Structure formats: structure tokens, C-alpha cells
Length: 348
Ligand code: DOR
Ligand code: ZN
Image 1 (cartoon, rainbow, N blue to C red):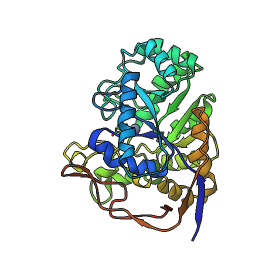
Image 2 (cartoon, rainbow, N blue to C red):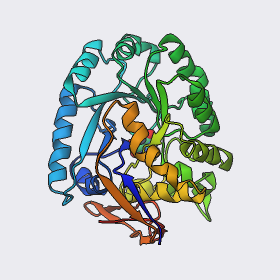
Image 3 (cartoon, rainbow, N blue to C red):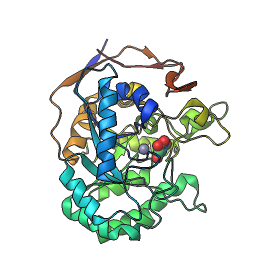
Image 4 (cartoon, protein in one colour):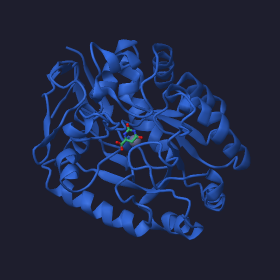
């Protein structure tokens, strides 16, 4: 039986939600990861440092009750809006707890209604971020209804991100959950301040998974799964040893009834196997020895944070995934691989 020892990894893109949902999911991440970049798309969103501090306190409180004893640090982010002021960026830099701002194009995804309607509204704020080195985390999709949903990332790169980096060449950017060959090529060709996170589900699944014998709402996320050619490009980037590509699960819990609906929410819950699924993906292409740098080194280096000193151990032994987890009252959470298995297990 093979085993794999890694420096404890970090999750550079995570949705923790709030209240009972937060309490239900926090343990899965804290058991595996030392730190996580926590997305600010609550309803209402986290737009100020004061709100981020209060949200952080709620996360720490939930951590204390989740029964996990290893240390876990939530790294907070702010939700960029048309109305964010440069003073908020200064406050974020001074706070020591806010590590980035998140750009959601208005309407692009879950709770993106208050997102940015036109990036030009943010130029004053982005100038300060570029000067201070505070990263901009990008949901890289246009929202134009005329653009095919499978092309929205590629069009965003041409229409929004490329011109933005021409205007602000020193802006540090993470193209979150990159899903296409074009996205990977863009990040590779850009300067050292531009990086990308990759999810396990985009490394493991292509768009056929949305229609396996019927419609599969638990495989629906945004950006939507792409064709096999793109999945292969992502896997190649993840296992290439290029430090611009690092782990970000985008684990995004939604209650079963919000997913299994006439108009279901986007998001895959993967935190229950947040590192194990990546081990599967890397092993499938014979690159397990590249996992540690991707999961535990490159993200910390990009965020200018120390690498973790502790380690975790994975064993190649199948773990059964329950059909559902408790989540909200009378509304459970269906995880990725529900009722199936994951090939690697985290040792206690
Ligand atoms: O699938 C997704 N779910 N994509 C996002 O961008 C947001 C996320 C969520 O918050 O549920
Ligand atoms: Zn996300």
C-alpha cells in the first residue's frame, strides 16, 4: 500500500458560508489544510475590513466547536464592488488578516449580484492594490448573455484581464479556478505576478460528467466543466512544477434542495476529500511526486506567507463517501463522489 507524506497543504480558494452551514463544513477543511483563502460571497457580501474581522471571528468560533485539534487559519478576503474605496484597501493592508480582494463580475455566479458592473469603476482601487502588492482574485468569466457559457473564460481574458494587466502591469492577480487551455496559456505567458488556482473537480471531470445518463446537478459549478482537451491542459499545468499553478478547491457547499432544483445552484462540495481528490488526479498521470509543491508550497510563496512546518500522510486505501452529510435543518449536503469512493485516505 503506497503512502504519501506532504507538508500540510493550504486551500487557496474556499467557500465556508456562515451560521449553521459554516459549522457543518469547517471541520472537513481544518482536518486537512493549515490555512484557506476564504471567499467573501456571503449574502450580503464581505466588503469591509470590519465585516471581514467579524466573519473571521465567527469562523474561529465554529472551529473551536468542530472537534478538530490541528491549527487552522482563515485568510480573509474582501468582495470588490463598484463602490469600494481606496481607503478600504489601505485598511486591508494594515489589517494583517485581509489577504486579497475578490472580483466577481456582476451576476457571474452565486451571490455575485453586488459584483463589479464595469472594471473601470475600480481603477482607483486597483492602482492602490498594484502599488501595495495586494492580490486581486478573479472570477474570470464575462456575463454577457450573448457569449456561449463554455467560452466565457476565454472571452474574459481577451476583453477584461489582458487590458487590465496592460493598464496595471504590477497588479498581482490570481485567475481562480482556471478551466481552459486558454486560461492556462494566459497565466503561463503573463508576468510573475499572475498565477492561477486549480480545483480537483476540474482536474478529474470533463463536461460529460454533467450528463452521465441524465442531468447531474452535483457536477454543476461555475466556471462550468469544459471538454476533455481543457481538462488535460489543466492537469498538465498542475503537474508541471510551474509555481504559478497551485491548489484551490473552490469547495462550494449548497443544500441538496438548492442543487436538485429546476434552477440549481452552481458549486461542488469537495472539502471532505479536499487533498485526497488531488492525489487521485496527480496519480492518474504518474505525477504524485509533484503534489506537495502544488498543494503546500507554491500558494504560500505567491501570497508571501511562510510554508507550513507540519505534515500530513495519505494512504492509498479507498474511503467510502457517504451519500450525504448533515448541513441545514432537513436539507443535507451532497458531496462530490456521494455514495462512491475516493482512492486515497487521510491518516488521522
Ligand atoms: O460553482 C461555484 N460556486 N462557482 C462560484 O464561482 C461560486 C461558488 C459558490 O459560491 O457557490
Ligand atoms: Zn469559488
